[in-house]
Structures are given as C-alpha cells and as structure tokens.
Image 1 (cartoon, helix red, strand yellow):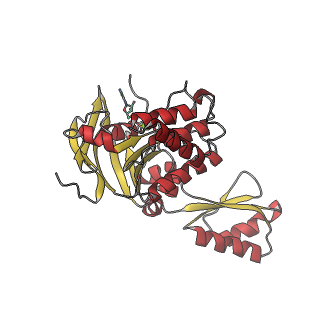
Image 2: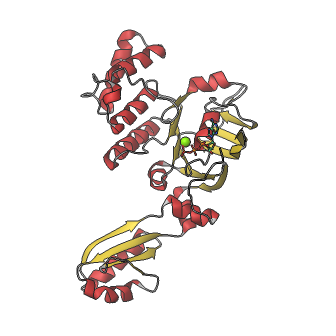
Image 3: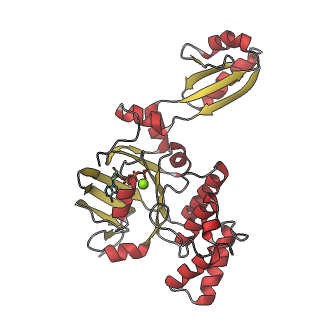
Amino acid sequence: MPVTSTLAIEADGLVKTFKDTRAVDGVDLEVPRGSVYGVLGPNGAGKTTTIKMLATLLRPDAGRARVLGRDIVGEADQVRGLVSLTGQLASVDDDLTGRENLVLLGRLLGYRPKDARVRAAELLAAFGLEDAAGRLVKNYSGGMRRRLDIAASIVVTPELMFLDEPTTGLDPRSRNQVWDIVRALVGEGTTVLLCSQYLDEADQLADRIAVIDHGRVIAEGTPGKLKASVGQGALHVRLLDPGRREEAAAILGPDIHREPDPAALTVPVAGADQASELVAALTASGLELASFSLAQPSLDEVFLALTGHPAEEEENAA
Ligand SMILES: Nc1ncnc2c1ncn2[C@@H]1O[C@H](COP(=O)(O)OP(=O)(O)OP(=O)(O)O)[C@@H](O)[C@H]1O
Ligand SMILES: [Mg+2]
C-alpha cells in the first residue's frame, strides 16, 4: 500500500463508548506531517481516549483512521511500531534508575548493549538528567520524571509522537524545558499530537488545534484563529497612585473593569499592539504604573465563547 499522504493522521468519525459514556463521539482529525497538532479540552473531553484509539491501544466502536498511512485496526501492528507514547499513556519503571530505564528501552528496541548505553548517555545529557542518572526514578521530581518520560519515548526518534498532557502539574521552569524538548523533536521532523488542558501550551507549541468537548471537535484551526474567535486578551494595569485611577479609566475607555484592588484596572484588548499603545498613552499622561500585564484568553474563555458553557468538569453518573 502506498504511504505518500501528507497527513500523519486522518481520522474519520471515531467513536468510543464505555457503558453509557460516549467518550468519543465522532471525531474527525487531519494532522499534517511535521507539525505539532494540539488537542485541547477539559477533563473528560475524550482526549486520552482519542489518542489511545489512534495509538491502537483501544479499538474504535465506529469510524476509521489512518496513522502514517496505516489503518489503525487493519494494520495495528505497523502503527504500533511507528508511533511513540508518553504521558498518561506509557511510562518508565519507578524501581530502576533513569539510566537503567533508557538502556533497557534501547535494548528492547534492538540496540546492542554498548549502543544502548551510548544512546542513554546522549539522552541523559540532552535532557539535563546526568546528575540524576544513577538515582531511582521513584525519587525524581515531577519535572525530572516528565523529561525522562519523553527521553524514554525517543530512544529511537519516532515519526509520530503522542504527548498526553506532558506538563500538567509542572512548575513554569520545567514546563519550559519540556516545551523546548518538543520543539527540538519537531525540528528533527517528528510529528507531535499534543493533548493539553492549557490554551497557552497549545499556543506555544501547536501549528493547529482541535478543541474537543464531550467527545466532539467543536473548533479547529490555528491558535491565532482560535483566540480571535474569543476576541481578545486583557490588559491589566496597576497604578502607583490609586487616587488617579479615574484619570486612567478615562484614557483606557468605556470597557474598563475596576478591580477590587483600588489601584488596578483591566481592559479587553485586541492584541499586544493595542496593549502597548494603551500603556504608552497612560505614561504619556504622567500616570506612573506599578505594573502591567497582558493576559491571553484562557481555555475557559475559549470554551465559553465556543459553546456558551464553561469548561467545568462533568459529573458522570457512575
Ligand atoms: N476505561 C474507561 N471506562 C469507563 N469510562 C472511561 C474509560 N476511559 C475513559 N472513560 C470516560 O470517558 C470520558 C473521556 O475520558 P478521557 O480520559 O478520554 O478524557 P480526557 O479528555 O483525556 O480527560 P483528562 O484531561 O482528565 O485526561 C470520561 O467521561 C471518562 O470518565
Ligand atoms: Mg486524558
């Protein structure tokens, strides 16, 4: 069978039901090769179930999908050999050291002992884990653990990688490290399907995003398009002199929101350009700022705009 599609993943009407929960309810996806594709949605939206089907860990009840040109049901073994899993899907052994995990995986993937040790050493260095290499994984911090998870999944550079919430629960520094690793992988030609609950993560990494809710794709496009559908971000300013807040309010316009903090104001803005113009206008009027920041819309706001309901967790009847 020719495998020439420019799409790494083509899914058509995927469905998966668990008892009376329709976890995935007709998902279509088209993921171009060489890109990062974000699947964004709240708890229980069906993200993990979708990638488990694409990774051949779960059999769909209905629908079809091709991954790297192979059918996920009819050619499941081939798909399994080509993709790599991390995060909520697969993980390393807690009772081995970081180095032992990587060497073991290298051996399982067919490296000779010496080559497995060389590859493990390269990855430990690349992921900043050299000092921790000899420690048991159960004593790793969350960030070290997550980096080791990703290192483990690229012992052999995969064509396609599923990353399921790779930074949930990490501190900002560790999140940035993981993001850098993902960018480096994509630089080497790997296609990444990234599930996340964070709009900012998808915004940092993804070329395109599908937003899913209740097992369905409710929006698809570039991060810019998605944010534009919400309309805006917000400029938050805090004045040095709370007594001058009304002067600032007059400059920022009628849409301002007066924060409980008497020195603070928030105003919706179309983007960074408008935010910096407003900051400049304030300072030009002699209003000194203690701080200002530009917040992009949150996933909650995106959801509210797309669905009319907040992205709160559903209570599932047991
Ligand atoms: N093995 C299972 N048996 C029964 N129900 C399941 C099973 N796996 C998932 N579900 C249900 O299917 C729905 C989708 O779950 P899924 O794990 O795909 O969501 P998710 O988007 O990955 O959420 P999270 O962000 O919390 O990881 C949920 O209602 C979940 O409770
Ligand atoms: Mg999940």
